[in-house]
Image: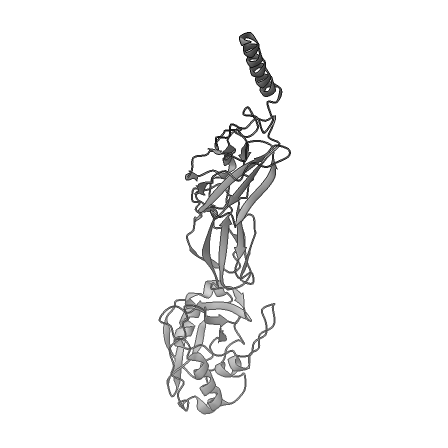
Amino acid sequence: MKKILILTLLILIIMTSCRDIINPVDPESDNYVGFESLDYDGDGIGSYEDVDEIAIAGPENGIVITDTASTVLIIQLLNPEVVTFYRIQISTDSSFVSNVFDSSTLTSNVFTVPAGTLANNTTYYWRAMAFDGSKWSDGWSSSNSFTVALTPSTIVFTDGQTVSKMIGSGVYTNVVSGVGDGVVTYTSGTPATATVDVNTGEVTLVAVGTTVITASKVATATHASVTNTYTLKVEFFVGYAYQGGKIAYILVSGDPGYDAAVQHGLIAATADQGTGRIWALDTYQSTTVPGGATGWAIGTGLANTNAIVAQNGAGSTYAAGLCDAYTNTDTGTGVYYDWYLPSHDELKKLYLNQGAIGGFGQDIYWSSTEVSSNSAYQKYFYNGYGSYGRKYDDRCVRPVRAF
């Protein structure tokens, strides 16, 4: 009888062992090799309902990522013969409401985050689970976090943040340097003033004014995006063909009518008018202009001219009347009618800039500034000397207008 009991016991032990060997992947087996199979509830059977079957292996929780091209998430390796797919979620919140990535068809436990998924200066949370062909693991893994902090990029303009260029001076490029390997693109805030090539930053000056040129460097795997700007002022220059003549002078701080935001100044006719004119008609050559034509400063020539014409009447036989009657021939810059005889200070600017304006002879020119009842100010353009001329003297005349 004792031998029979021992034999029976041996048979039962052998049967139990064979059962476990024959069913190595049976979820009811303590030797289950799919998800980590541990017997947590003490019932003698290991199953994935009893365990957190999947865990995160790397990277380290809370790590700072400085290269998004190599952001690799690693899930604890499970038996590849059992796991069919992995699922990964990446979110900007720990509750996984705002997911930026969610895929349940990943076939490897090592996963590289796709380019463009992650933003700079952002903390992300991620978690995973696995699928064995018929069932997902029992819930998500615990979550880990990481923060993307790319190297800051910079844009530096060689010519600085404020640049002035003269209209008509062609193309211009404010060369860019700085940190970062991202592609730089450009835009112009006011294309009517200056256009810019989106790829090269080459600027074409279109008209006088101000525009803001913006350079933007895109983010790369290792460097953050960045934007910088510079202000481009497109300005007039003396001698520039404009509004019926040539710019003869540009107002500066301290001049009457100066505006730091908008350029103003004088335009001279492109040539002298007539072969010489008296300052006043015979009747008024010894008579003071009523109301006075005594303005010397820049900006007073028009009032002087109007007073002289009011005394002498319309006509082009005297200097102020000739300027008042002058209308320029259109050479592509427009036709204008508001010309006048320059004052003392205005005539002086014409003398100083005569080379850029052009067309002056080595002669004596009238101003509209009256000195006395029978004389007015005149200037010698061959040596810069000024004196008082008799109103009956014939002198050269160059009309001007304000802009």
